[in-house]
Image 1: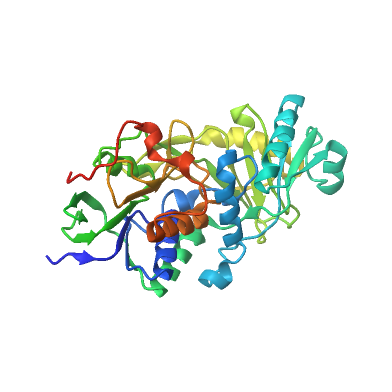
Image 2: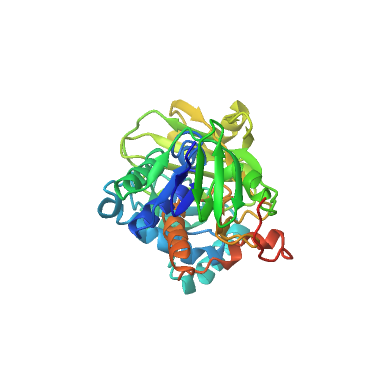
Length: 384
Protein backbone atom coordinates (compact mmCIF):
# COMPACT_ATOMS: atom_id res chain seq x y z
CA UNK A 1 0.00 0.00 0.00
CA UNK A 2 1.40 3.38 -1.01
CA UNK A 3 1.96 5.62 2.04
CA UNK A 4 0.11 8.89 2.34
CA UNK A 5 2.72 11.59 2.94
CA UNK A 6 2.77 15.19 4.18
CA UNK A 7 5.08 17.74 5.78
CA UNK A 8 3.63 17.13 9.24
CA UNK A 9 1.73 14.20 10.72
CA UNK A 10 -0.41 14.86 13.81
CA UNK A 11 -1.64 11.91 15.86
CA UNK A 12 -4.71 12.87 17.86
CA UNK A 13 -7.64 15.00 16.71
CA UNK A 14 -8.73 16.81 19.85
CA UNK A 15 -8.71 20.59 20.08
CA UNK A 16 -4.88 20.69 20.29
CA UNK A 17 -4.38 18.57 17.20
CA UNK A 18 -7.14 20.21 15.16
CA UNK A 19 -5.97 23.74 16.01
CA UNK A 20 -2.36 22.86 15.21
CA UNK A 21 -3.43 21.39 11.87
CA UNK A 22 -5.31 24.59 11.07
CA UNK A 23 -2.46 26.94 11.94
CA UNK A 24 0.12 24.77 10.15
CA UNK A 25 -2.01 24.69 7.01
CA UNK A 26 -2.28 28.49 7.15
CA UNK A 27 1.51 28.55 7.21
CA UNK A 28 1.57 26.57 4.00
CA UNK A 29 2.50 23.20 5.47
CA UNK A 30 0.82 20.03 4.22
CA UNK A 31 -0.73 18.22 7.18
CA UNK A 32 -2.12 14.78 8.01
CA UNK A 33 -4.35 14.76 11.09
CA UNK A 34 -5.05 11.20 12.29
CA UNK A 35 -7.85 10.64 14.81
CA UNK A 36 -8.78 7.19 16.14
CA UNK A 37 -12.44 8.11 16.59
CA UNK A 38 -14.15 11.38 15.71
CA UNK A 39 -12.64 14.85 15.96
CA UNK A 40 -13.08 16.25 19.47
CA UNK A 41 -14.83 13.12 20.71
CA UNK A 42 -12.84 12.67 23.92
CA UNK A 43 -11.41 15.19 26.40
CA UNK A 44 -11.90 18.17 24.07
CA UNK A 45 -15.60 17.46 23.65
CA UNK A 46 -16.73 16.32 27.10
CA UNK A 47 -15.31 19.04 29.32
CA UNK A 48 -17.05 22.02 30.95
CA UNK A 49 -16.19 24.58 28.28
CA UNK A 50 -14.42 27.01 30.57
CA UNK A 51 -12.47 29.78 28.82
CA UNK A 52 -10.77 30.71 32.08
CA UNK A 53 -7.39 32.23 32.82
CA UNK A 54 -7.55 33.00 36.52
CA UNK A 55 -6.37 30.26 38.83
CA UNK A 56 -3.95 28.82 36.29
CA UNK A 57 -0.33 27.87 36.90
CA UNK A 58 1.29 31.30 36.54
CA UNK A 59 3.90 30.39 33.86
CA UNK A 60 0.95 29.16 31.80
CA UNK A 61 -0.60 32.63 31.58
CA UNK A 62 1.32 33.86 28.50
CA UNK A 63 -0.04 30.85 26.62
CA UNK A 64 -3.52 31.41 28.11
CA UNK A 65 -3.42 35.09 27.09
CA UNK A 66 -2.45 34.17 23.53
CA UNK A 67 -5.27 31.65 23.44
CA UNK A 68 -7.82 34.13 24.83
CA UNK A 69 -6.95 36.55 22.04
CA UNK A 70 -7.70 33.83 19.49
CA UNK A 71 -10.99 32.89 21.16
CA UNK A 72 -12.09 36.49 20.64
CA UNK A 73 -11.67 36.38 16.88
CA UNK A 74 -12.83 32.85 16.03
CA UNK A 75 -15.52 33.94 13.52
CA UNK A 76 -13.06 35.88 11.38
CA UNK A 77 -10.37 33.23 11.84
CA UNK A 78 -12.19 29.92 11.31
CA UNK A 79 -15.67 31.04 10.27
CA UNK A 80 -17.44 29.80 13.44
CA UNK A 81 -17.66 31.12 17.01
CA UNK A 82 -18.04 27.77 18.89
CA UNK A 83 -20.56 29.70 21.06
CA UNK A 84 -17.75 31.59 22.78
CA UNK A 85 -19.19 34.15 25.17
CA UNK A 86 -16.96 36.59 27.07
CA UNK A 87 -19.28 36.45 30.05
CA UNK A 88 -16.72 36.99 32.80
CA UNK A 89 -15.53 34.46 35.37
CA UNK A 90 -16.01 34.72 39.14
CA UNK A 91 -14.28 32.60 41.81
CA UNK A 92 -15.91 32.81 45.22
CA UNK A 93 -14.55 31.65 48.58
CA UNK A 94 -16.06 30.62 51.89
CA UNK A 95 -13.25 31.39 54.37
CA UNK A 96 -10.31 33.68 55.12
CA UNK A 97 -7.69 31.15 54.05
CA UNK A 98 -9.14 30.91 50.54
CA UNK A 99 -9.51 34.69 50.42
CA UNK A 100 -5.77 34.92 51.03
CA UNK A 101 -5.21 32.60 48.07
CA UNK A 102 -7.36 34.80 45.83
CA UNK A 103 -5.57 37.97 46.95
CA UNK A 104 -2.11 36.51 46.41
CA UNK A 105 -3.04 35.14 42.98
CA UNK A 106 -4.44 38.51 41.89
CA UNK A 107 -1.16 40.17 42.86
CA UNK A 108 1.00 37.50 41.19
CA UNK A 109 -1.06 37.42 37.97
CA UNK A 110 -0.88 41.16 37.37
CA UNK A 111 2.65 41.12 35.83
CA UNK A 112 1.32 38.54 33.34
CA UNK A 113 -1.30 41.02 32.14
CA UNK A 114 -4.25 39.46 33.98
CA UNK A 115 -6.08 42.09 36.03
CA UNK A 116 -8.52 40.57 38.50
CA UNK A 117 -11.13 42.46 40.50
CA UNK A 118 -11.36 41.42 44.13
CA UNK A 119 -14.89 41.81 45.44
CA UNK A 120 -16.15 41.93 49.02
CA UNK A 121 -19.21 39.99 50.15
CA UNK A 122 -21.39 43.09 49.82
CA UNK A 123 -20.02 43.84 46.34
CA UNK A 124 -20.69 40.23 45.29
CA UNK A 125 -24.27 40.31 46.47
CA UNK A 126 -24.87 43.67 44.85
CA UNK A 127 -23.51 42.66 41.45
CA UNK A 128 -24.44 38.95 41.45
CA UNK A 129 -27.51 38.70 43.73
CA UNK A 130 -28.06 35.04 42.85
CA UNK A 131 -24.86 34.00 44.70
CA UNK A 132 -24.92 32.40 48.12
CA UNK A 133 -24.67 34.51 51.25
CA UNK A 134 -21.96 32.08 52.43
CA UNK A 135 -19.46 33.65 50.01
CA UNK A 136 -17.23 36.09 51.88
CA UNK A 137 -15.44 37.42 48.76
CA UNK A 138 -14.71 36.75 45.10
CA UNK A 139 -12.22 37.32 42.31
CA UNK A 140 -13.67 38.50 39.01
CA UNK A 141 -12.03 38.17 35.59
CA UNK A 142 -14.23 40.22 33.22
CA UNK A 143 -12.77 39.05 29.90
CA UNK A 144 -12.91 35.28 30.48
CA UNK A 145 -16.00 33.24 29.68
CA UNK A 146 -17.14 29.98 28.14
CA UNK A 147 -17.69 28.15 24.86
CA UNK A 148 -19.26 24.93 23.62
CA UNK A 149 -16.70 22.10 23.77
CA UNK A 150 -18.75 19.97 21.40
CA UNK A 151 -18.27 22.56 18.67
CA UNK A 152 -14.70 23.86 19.05
CA UNK A 153 -12.47 21.02 17.85
CA UNK A 154 -14.69 20.07 14.86
CA UNK A 155 -14.83 23.76 13.88
CA UNK A 156 -11.03 23.96 13.83
CA UNK A 157 -10.83 20.68 11.88
CA UNK A 158 -13.26 21.95 9.25
CA UNK A 159 -11.24 25.15 8.96
CA UNK A 160 -8.06 23.08 8.66
CA UNK A 161 -9.58 21.12 5.78
CA UNK A 162 -10.56 24.34 4.04
CA UNK A 163 -6.98 25.51 4.50
CA UNK A 164 -5.69 22.33 2.85
CA UNK A 165 -5.10 19.86 5.71
CA UNK A 166 -6.01 16.20 5.30
CA UNK A 167 -8.13 15.07 8.27
CA UNK A 168 -8.73 11.35 8.72
CA UNK A 169 -11.18 10.13 11.38
CA UNK A 170 -11.56 6.45 12.40
CA UNK A 171 -7.81 6.12 11.90
CA UNK A 172 -6.19 4.45 14.89
CA UNK A 173 -2.40 4.41 14.87
CA UNK A 174 -1.17 0.93 15.79
CA UNK A 175 2.56 1.60 15.27
CA UNK A 176 4.67 4.71 14.88
CA UNK A 177 8.44 4.92 14.50
CA UNK A 178 11.13 6.98 12.86
CA UNK A 179 12.58 5.35 9.77
CA UNK A 180 15.50 7.28 8.36
CA UNK A 181 14.45 10.91 8.07
CA UNK A 182 10.72 10.25 8.23
CA UNK A 183 8.19 9.18 10.80
CA UNK A 184 6.07 6.26 9.69
CA UNK A 185 2.70 5.45 11.24
CA UNK A 186 0.71 2.31 10.49
CA UNK A 187 -3.03 2.34 11.15
CA UNK A 188 -4.89 -0.70 12.46
CA UNK A 189 -6.40 -1.21 9.01
CA UNK A 190 -2.94 -1.29 7.38
CA UNK A 191 -2.79 2.22 5.95
CA UNK A 192 0.64 3.85 6.15
CA UNK A 193 1.43 7.52 6.74
CA UNK A 194 4.77 9.31 6.48
CA UNK A 195 6.11 12.74 7.34
CA UNK A 196 9.46 14.24 8.39
CA UNK A 197 7.73 15.89 11.37
CA UNK A 198 5.30 14.27 13.80
CA UNK A 199 3.26 15.66 16.68
CA UNK A 200 1.59 13.50 19.29
CA UNK A 201 -1.55 15.09 20.73
CA UNK A 202 -3.45 11.93 21.57
CA UNK A 203 -4.68 12.86 25.05
CA UNK A 204 -4.89 9.94 27.45
CA UNK A 205 -3.46 7.67 24.74
CA UNK A 206 -0.35 9.79 24.16
CA UNK A 207 1.82 8.15 26.83
CA UNK A 208 1.72 4.87 24.96
CA UNK A 209 3.09 6.64 21.88
CA UNK A 210 5.73 8.76 23.64
CA UNK A 211 7.05 5.59 25.31
CA UNK A 212 7.86 4.20 21.87
CA UNK A 213 10.36 7.04 21.48
CA UNK A 214 11.98 6.40 24.86
CA UNK A 215 9.97 9.05 26.71
CA UNK A 216 7.48 7.26 28.97
CA UNK A 217 5.34 9.40 31.27
CA UNK A 218 3.01 8.50 34.11
CA UNK A 219 -0.24 9.48 32.40
CA UNK A 220 -3.43 8.52 34.26
CA UNK A 221 -6.91 8.49 32.73
CA UNK A 222 -9.78 10.08 34.66
CA UNK A 223 -13.32 11.10 33.74
CA UNK A 224 -14.91 14.49 34.52
CA UNK A 225 -18.32 14.36 36.16
CA UNK A 226 -20.57 16.62 34.11
CA UNK A 227 -24.30 17.36 34.05
CA UNK A 228 -26.82 19.81 32.64
CA UNK A 229 -30.23 21.02 33.85
CA UNK A 230 -33.44 21.79 32.06
CA UNK A 231 -33.61 25.27 30.43
CA UNK A 232 -34.29 28.03 32.95
CA UNK A 233 -34.74 31.81 32.55
CA UNK A 234 -31.35 33.30 31.68
CA UNK A 235 -30.05 34.97 34.84
CA UNK A 236 -26.46 33.83 35.41
CA UNK A 237 -24.02 35.52 33.06
CA UNK A 238 -20.56 34.75 34.48
CA UNK A 239 -18.95 31.36 34.87
CA UNK A 240 -18.84 30.57 38.59
CA UNK A 241 -16.15 28.59 40.39
CA UNK A 242 -15.03 28.12 43.98
CA UNK A 243 -11.57 28.62 45.47
CA UNK A 244 -11.20 25.86 48.06
CA UNK A 245 -8.95 23.06 49.25
CA UNK A 246 -11.97 20.82 49.82
CA UNK A 247 -12.42 18.66 46.72
CA UNK A 248 -16.20 18.33 47.13
CA UNK A 249 -16.57 22.12 47.22
CA UNK A 250 -14.68 22.54 43.94
CA UNK A 251 -17.76 22.99 41.75
CA UNK A 252 -18.14 25.15 38.67
CA UNK A 253 -21.22 26.13 36.70
CA UNK A 254 -22.32 28.26 33.78
CA UNK A 255 -25.64 29.07 32.14
CA UNK A 256 -25.88 28.94 28.37
CA UNK A 257 -28.07 31.38 26.47
CA UNK A 258 -30.65 28.64 25.90
CA UNK A 259 -31.10 28.56 29.68
CA UNK A 260 -29.58 25.25 30.76
CA UNK A 261 -27.07 25.18 33.63
CA UNK A 262 -23.93 23.15 32.82
CA UNK A 263 -21.95 22.07 35.86
CA UNK A 264 -19.13 19.79 36.96
CA UNK A 265 -16.32 19.43 39.46
CA UNK A 266 -15.57 17.50 42.61
CA UNK A 267 -13.97 14.07 42.44
CA UNK A 268 -13.30 12.71 38.96
CA UNK A 269 -14.51 9.27 37.96
CA UNK A 270 -12.91 6.17 36.46
CA UNK A 271 -11.93 6.04 32.78
CA UNK A 272 -10.38 3.32 30.64
CA UNK A 273 -8.49 4.26 27.46
CA UNK A 274 -8.43 0.57 26.45
CA UNK A 275 -12.19 0.25 26.22
CA UNK A 276 -12.70 3.99 25.59
CA UNK A 277 -15.25 4.11 28.37
CA UNK A 278 -15.70 6.55 31.26
CA UNK A 279 -18.43 6.74 33.84
CA UNK A 280 -20.64 9.45 35.37
CA UNK A 281 -21.20 8.19 38.93
CA UNK A 282 -24.56 8.86 40.67
CA UNK A 283 -22.91 9.42 44.05
CA UNK A 284 -20.75 12.19 42.56
CA UNK A 285 -23.87 13.84 41.15
CA UNK A 286 -25.50 13.85 44.59
CA UNK A 287 -22.49 15.67 46.01
CA UNK A 288 -22.47 18.14 43.13
CA UNK A 289 -26.15 18.94 43.57
CA UNK A 290 -25.55 19.81 47.23
CA UNK A 291 -22.81 22.22 46.23
CA UNK A 292 -24.77 23.76 43.36
CA UNK A 293 -27.63 24.51 45.75
CA UNK A 294 -25.09 26.05 48.11
CA UNK A 295 -23.55 28.31 45.43
CA UNK A 296 -26.83 29.41 43.82
CA UNK A 297 -29.73 28.61 46.18
CA UNK A 298 -32.30 29.41 43.48
CA UNK A 299 -31.19 26.27 41.61
CA UNK A 300 -32.39 24.00 44.43
CA UNK A 301 -35.31 22.62 42.40
CA UNK A 302 -33.73 22.57 38.93
CA UNK A 303 -34.22 19.29 37.06
CA UNK A 304 -31.13 17.54 35.73
CA UNK A 305 -31.70 16.16 32.25
CA UNK A 306 -28.33 14.59 31.34
CA UNK A 307 -25.03 13.50 32.85
CA UNK A 308 -21.84 12.47 31.06
CA UNK A 309 -18.16 11.81 31.38
CA UNK A 310 -15.21 11.21 29.04
CA UNK A 311 -11.54 10.30 29.03
CA UNK A 312 -8.96 12.89 30.11
CA UNK A 313 -5.21 12.41 30.70
CA UNK A 314 -3.58 13.57 33.95
CA UNK A 315 0.13 13.95 34.72
CA UNK A 316 1.65 13.75 38.23
CA UNK A 317 2.26 17.52 38.46
CA UNK A 318 -1.01 18.55 36.72
CA UNK A 319 1.02 20.49 34.14
CA UNK A 320 0.76 19.56 30.44
CA UNK A 321 3.49 18.36 28.12
CA UNK A 322 4.10 20.69 25.22
CA UNK A 323 7.08 21.26 22.94
CA UNK A 324 9.78 19.25 21.18
CA UNK A 325 10.88 15.77 22.13
CA UNK A 326 14.02 15.63 24.29
CA UNK A 327 15.26 12.57 22.40
CA UNK A 328 14.04 12.48 18.80
CA UNK A 329 14.48 15.30 16.29
CA UNK A 330 11.35 16.26 14.38
CA UNK A 331 9.06 14.92 17.09
CA UNK A 332 6.74 17.19 19.10
CA UNK A 333 4.24 16.71 21.89
CA UNK A 334 1.05 18.46 23.08
CA UNK A 335 -0.86 16.31 25.56
CA UNK A 336 -1.67 15.77 29.25
CA UNK A 337 -3.67 18.94 29.79
CA UNK A 338 -5.06 17.49 33.03
CA UNK A 339 -8.64 18.63 32.68
CA UNK A 340 -7.87 22.30 32.05
CA UNK A 341 -6.79 22.43 28.41
CA UNK A 342 -9.93 23.69 26.72
CA UNK A 343 -9.14 27.39 27.14
CA UNK A 344 -5.56 26.75 26.01
CA UNK A 345 -6.46 24.78 22.88
CA UNK A 346 -6.40 27.52 20.20
CA UNK A 347 -3.22 28.98 21.68
CA UNK A 348 -1.57 25.57 21.82
CA UNK A 349 -2.34 25.09 18.13
CA UNK A 350 -0.93 28.51 17.23
CA UNK A 351 2.22 28.02 19.31
CA UNK A 352 2.90 24.47 18.12
CA UNK A 353 2.46 25.51 14.48
CA UNK A 354 4.86 28.40 15.03
CA UNK A 355 7.35 26.12 16.77
CA UNK A 356 7.20 23.46 14.07
CA UNK A 357 7.32 25.98 11.23
CA UNK A 358 10.00 28.32 12.57
CA UNK A 359 11.86 26.19 15.12
CA UNK A 360 10.98 28.61 17.92
CA UNK A 361 8.01 30.33 19.47
CA UNK A 362 7.49 33.75 20.99
CA UNK A 363 5.43 32.27 23.84
CA UNK A 364 7.46 30.61 26.63
CA UNK A 365 6.68 26.91 26.97
CA UNK A 366 9.83 25.61 28.66
CA UNK A 367 7.99 24.68 31.91
CA UNK A 368 5.96 22.14 29.92
CA UNK A 369 8.84 20.16 28.42
CA UNK A 370 8.65 16.38 28.55
CA UNK A 371 12.27 16.42 29.73
CA UNK A 372 11.08 17.20 33.28
CA UNK A 373 10.12 13.52 33.51
CA UNK A 374 13.41 12.27 31.94
CA UNK A 375 15.99 15.03 32.57
CA UNK A 376 18.95 12.89 31.47
CA UNK A 377 17.53 11.88 28.13
CA UNK A 378 19.65 13.77 25.59
CA UNK A 379 18.51 14.42 22.05
CA UNK A 380 19.08 11.50 19.77
CA UNK A 381 17.40 10.09 16.71
CA UNK A 382 15.83 6.70 17.07
CA UNK A 383 14.44 4.14 14.67
CA UNK A 384 12.30 2.58 17.35
